[in-house]
Structures are given as C-alpha cells and as structure tokens.
Length: 247
Image (tube, rainbow, N blue to C red; front, side, top):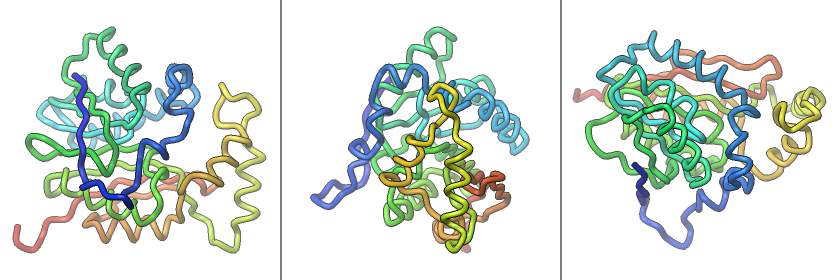
C-alpha cells in the first residue's frame, strides 16, 4: 500500500524535504544498490536485536522515518503487528514495495512523506526508528521534526535514532573531519567515498551531538543510551518519550 500525506501547513517559507533529500536518493539505480552501500543488513540485524530487547513484539507498531529501501522495516515486520515505512523518495519506496511483495510481507505500509509531512494514522506508535535521515534537515527544522516524532509515540515509546552526528569539540573539527575523510573507501560500492562525504559536509546538515541531544530533551525525550563511532562522526541513541505530569 502506498500513500502520500501532507503534514505541517505549507507556506512559502516551509522546508521542502523532497528538494533536499539528495539527488542520488531519487535515482532508481542508486536506490537499487543503496543498502549494500550503506551496510544496511548488518545494522538492521543489530537494531532488530536491540528493539526486541526493548519490548518489540507481535502487538507493536513501528514507524520507520526515512525508511529508504526498507531493510529495517521488512526485517522488523516479522516480529510486530504494524510497520509504517516513510520516505520522501518514490524510487526508494518502489524498491521497498517490490521487496515486500517478493518476501510476502503484508504488514508494511509505505508512505511517501518526510519528518515534516508525515501524519500518523491509527493508534500511537510503540517505536519510531530513523537511520541517516534527520541530517537532511537544518537544525531549526530538526527541532520541529523531533516534536512531531514525540507526538507519533505513545508515552514511554522508544525512539531509535542513528545518524551522522559530530561528537568532537568544535576546536577539533579540522583534525576530526580530515581523519574521517581519509578513512573513506575509494570505491562507491564499498561505502561513501571521500567526495561523497565532502558533498555531505557542504550541502547537508549534520550537527554536533551536544546540540542534537539538547533538541531531543527539549522534544520530551529521555536519552537512555548514546554511543558514538570511533571517528566521532556517527551517533546512535535510544530515547524514551517522557510521560507528562498529567499522565
């Protein structure tokens, strides 16, 4: 099932998530090879184990924001009731839809939308998952997006967030970024190359960990777990939506 939702009221100053999704993400050939490049299967297996340990079960609803070609969505669908796979790229969702049909997965709903345009239908979600998608938004829009994520989740619901996040001090930026770029693979089919990472730095919106963590707390999340890659250019979080004082 494919649908398109429109969330925040559009105005002339609204952020266009499709226009800022990255040209390559809208390309069918790129979409077909995306998960191999992103090492999606390995990360999905690790996150599936983590999510099941956090209570994902046959009654759960999970929303995957920035679902891409659906490696996580299709993997977790075997263990929960409902999965909503949300992505702004129709090319990515085409791959996901084809894979779901091939695997006989019937409990994944595909929605062409983004953090700012997805409107959740039905009961609130138990889990929200997002990998390498939030960095497409500038910080102002990240804050609004995280507020919207909190609305999707039930109290005590879990947000699992992975992204390109900088956990080094600003004074270390030149050294840390150059070390990251030097370690990039030469071939694009082995991961993101130096030129692709340089384009990310110029045109996308990774932020510092201490800024992102303040945004998460401001949106009503308690950060239960935070881990940073050895290069301090990636971060992964387990966040719990706090209950309000009236609940």
